[in-house]
Length: 354
Ligand SMILES: [Fe+2]
Image 1 (spheres, rainbow, N blue to C red):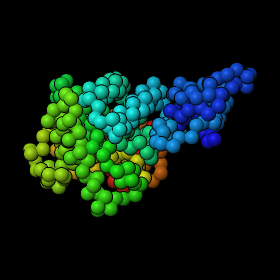
Image 2 (image 1 turned 30 degrees about the horizontal axis):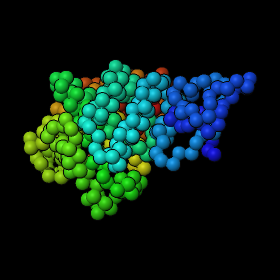
Image 3 (image 1 turned 45 degrees about the vertical axis):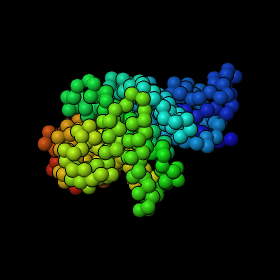
Image 4 (image 1 turned 90 degrees about the vertical axis):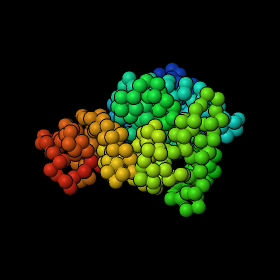
């Protein structure tokens, strides 16, 4: 029976035994699913390890590393995210076994979470401190949904279009449910042949969304075209410029940002600062829409004021001020002195740590 440390990585795991306090009082019963509220209760009783049920499939507990316990992440929001993630997994898995659920089921689930995320900026920051090797598609779907509605808001689109973008982001990779698991979950780089199969998720997604009750052509197109690039270098149709609807262009930005920020097994983790820099480069090279990227990058940068970051030389600093001209090279504080990254070109922000 596996033992697990009592920290926030325990959320979502199921207790294999009753847990008692020193005084003999039952704290938590066997089969309890640990929530964010349980963790401090156990720690207060100086319980450092508990027996948990072996998880054979992807477990939510894996999602949140002990790193989170070092942060002042809002427990309620983390718990809401974990809950939404579980529901997402259940809903997406239904596609495999019971046919395609109705669109309403996806949008209802997504907006439960979106509500939380717009009320609290801390939620957004939490997205990218959570780590986990598995559950990538589910987590990515939630994140991209949140990012899409955020970008739509930044672009001052109306409420209906903002809501549409949330759903479009949430569903954009739904076609991956038809990709063989050994390719979808392959830890290393895909072979050319595997990549050809993987690319099919855009077409599968289009078909699946089209078949959902209450969906629209544009919603299905968002799945089909989210890997297209303005310069014609994307797939599956190599569309160019305005042949790609604006909604799909927003989705492309959100998708790429989340893919860069999320840790994958075969590449190191990248900070949102670096991810924003990469997006900016893509926009300058003509692959992504520059207006969409500019709005988004500025927002990301502002969001990280007061956050702690690690520089590429290993030093820990605090982000103090974002410059309008170069939002990705902020003024930071290193113990008692200030460093302006605009003038220290060798230094970059490597990782956000809080
Ligand atoms: Fe995709």
